[in-house]
Image (cartoon, rainbow, N blue to C red):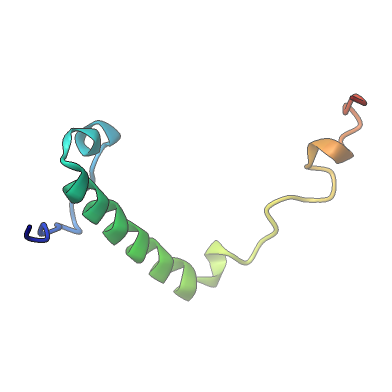
Length: 67
């Protein structure tokens, strides 16, 4: 089976992707993941932060109830 040609300029909706055959959908998602990985590798602003601060996690919240 031939590898589908992917248009990297196209923005796909979730509904459009669901309608595609699995091979095409997987190729599109793999291409998007490759582009995203490259951006994250080369743009420090995307990764130069802490995801959670000291008080952001549920376990550290003053509202946390013991289980």
